[in-house]
Length: 375
Image (cartoon, rainbow, N blue to C red; front, side, top):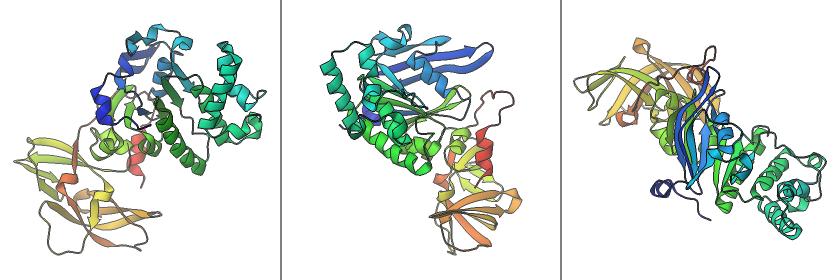
């Protein structure tokens, strides 16, 4: 089944509509006025650092938490007034929550048996669900006799067997090792395409969100920072936080005067009003050059390499330029040690972003500060 495109998603009534949802625990505000639509057949990832409110939002959708304000709608139905068992929503938890004393097929059948479905129907639907996740051969096994990745598939089958309209996944890959996690990302995305239902996937892992999602909803301190496709949120981040949280970037604090942007030794023309401006410049958009001529629209600067970090196919290089400007540059790996370099980038690759005015929780360090320091 073909995945719903972002364009299609915007042209139809949403499957799920989250309207001005807020959540308070006493004086602690966890979510603030969240409004978000999820399309039929969409893979939406809620991305955010620890404490951003992403799991709380998922629990409100599932019905395990009650919102302090706002509404949830699924089509014409007011979802937040329904108990969890009446919502056509299923959840796959981080720990899978499989019953150790039941076989794989008994675990998958559990919800149908509680609902008192006919035995013939149960057998047929369990077989179909196990086939979908490629676990039919393990139907008689106990959870303790299968791997973590296989347990994750069983948890998915148990959710899918109930034929939900929406599947919620709360960091289901976090317990897996790196190689298996990458494999399961591909399999999970493929499964979602096959079954054709909407997935809402919660993670703090930026790479995971980029690989799997149709759209990403980036949460920061209980507020939506940006909702966009992976390409858009990476290539055209709306805020400094989004630019730094997803991948590496160079944040350039500039001043605009008379149509010229200036930042330490850098300058280029731009149709912007006078005043301070902030730009995001991705490391891969800066290149080292030896050419004596400057291409129209490019910006050049010279600097001294202070650090090189090897990342396999690429390297991240920290370059100290004059007037205190520091740039991080991504280059192909294996180039050898560098000293003085000439850098060049196209002025159109510097993306104007805005500062985010978000209330931070007391005592919690922002993951963005760590991101800005690591290369």
